[in-house]
Image (cartoon, rainbow, N blue to C red; front, side):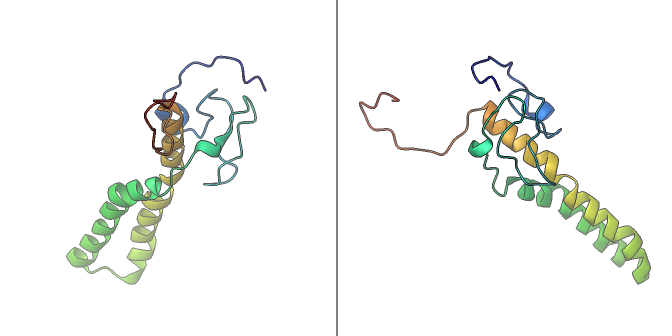
Length: 131
């Protein structure tokens, strides 16, 4: 784990969507479906800086779930299909559009935080060396 090595800047959308380390691009971000690892097993980057909060869920709800639910409502109003049509068409559409995008979006947001050096806001006083 060489932490003094310089790494190239990797685009967040390239490494994050794949669930790779935003610093080296080789290690893994996730230990489960959405659970973050403690750090990168390749370069040793500590992932404690990462806090995507509800960002992935917000984007999925706005851009994937809403159209899927609108499709389901349209299907019901336009054709009044049987219950089985909703089980075999509507339910998979809603589940696929609501669950599958969560992991790539979370990876992209975490990689973006690293790329842009985003961190919690802090008050800087005049005369502070960080000012």
